[in-house]
Picture 1 (cartoon, rainbow, N blue to C red):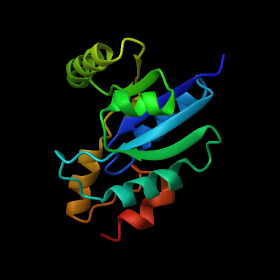
Picture 2 (cartoon, rainbow, N blue to C red):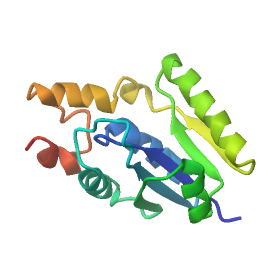
Picture 3 (tube, rainbow, N blue to C red):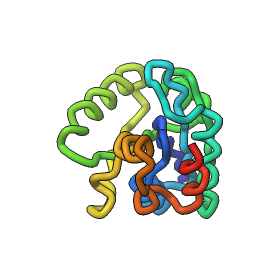
Length: 157
């Protein structure tokens, strides 16, 4: 059976933790659509176009990955893409309550949607896009936190 999953997020910017989740999801599914959200409620550091560009660079080594942007409800995007599985990452217990709530909300909107939660490897468990943005604001070194393919791009801000 052909399985397609969606890994959504703002990815502002993409981190090694995100890539870790994508790598493991590629072992579980035939196709992964990395869905970069155009969330007007979030004040992102990078434009939607830049975030999509960064994600494409960071995932070019994965044959199963396609990067797309979306600005709708996630379940509507999933229907359009004919995907029934949503992948979400859990770093800490603090993520769990929010992610569980979102998983139930998505299920209430589309009974056929299932959410799968993956934990990043321990070495990536502390990495978040907000940590990376905070370090970038003070011109700190984030080379150990983000994919090498985008390091030069994000340090030019």
